[in-house]
Structures are given as C-alpha cells and as structure tokens.
Length: 199
Image 1 (cartoon, rainbow, N blue to C red):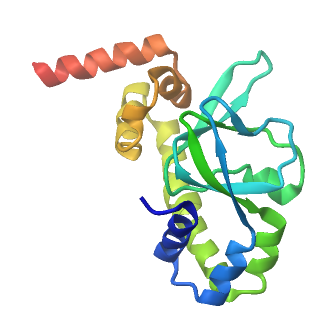
Image 2 (image 1 turned 90 degrees about the vertical axis):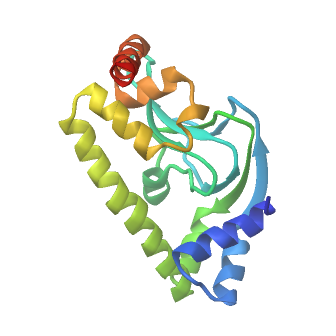
C-alpha cells in the first residue's frame, strides 16, 4: 500500500494531471493523522477549519434530529475527501459530524490554505472543478433524485450498486439509517430479495 501522502497525490492526479508546483502547494496544506473506531473527526456544532483525504479506513457523515436520532448522510472509503464543506465555506458550526467506522489514517488539509492555493495555482483549481463535477453533480444529484422517487426496496438495491465496495463493511443499522428506514424494515427487504433470488 502507498504511504498516505503518495496516495493523495496519486488520487489527485487521477482527476487532473497537476504540475509539481501545484502539488507542492497542496502538500504544504497537509498533515497525516490517525483516529480510532468510533472517534469523531469533525463534530456537530464545531466550526471546522479542515477537511481530509481518507487513506485507509471507513467513515460516515451523520446528522441528528431534535430527539437525538442519528441519520447517516454519506459514507467515505479510501480515496475520498470527508469534510463539512458547507460549514467550511460559510465559516459556521457544522450540522453534520464525520465519524470513523474503522481505524482510519487520513491526510488532514487546512481549508483556508488550500482555498488560497486554488486561486494561485490554476492546475489545483482544475483538479477541484473535476472533483466537484464528478462527486457533487454527476453522482450526488441523480442519487438524491432517485432516493426521493423510489421505494425502500429499490433504494436499497441502488445502495448496493452505488456502495458495492463498502456495503459488506457496514453494519446493517447504518445502512438502514442512510436509507431512512428502520433496521427491522431493512431486514424484511433483505429477506424479500433473498427469497426472490432463491426461487
């Protein structure tokens, strides 16, 4: 396995072939950190100053309702960039938390330093645009529309496709929370699917 900073560099260059000066500007924003299972990288009501690149491990983004119930908003595996992006841009307390579901090694990235580098190094800006286009437009928007239009069983099957690599690593109650259903409902759906596949 690549060291974490090399993994970050390789991932960035898959989105856009940035030059060495741009890469060094990015590296200047970074530090390697490790957190354990159950630890929170960024908390609800905390005003974040960093986002991260996940080198190894599995994380979730979740929010709380007024009764304290948790709702999973997203999952992150290796090669993704967990962070509270709206809170970073607005410089306000976050409404979501980012928590480790496995032991994690990350590259934490200073947001203001990174943002300044974006406007200094055009290659870094191009990488950022390509990343946002893929994950915040081409992936996120159709997924959100699909989840509004379809029943829970269809949403679960879409989930298994969208998160095929990490689904086996996730407890079922976390998947249920992401789908907006109870663990009992998910168990019924899984039985229905299994029954259909074996008949």
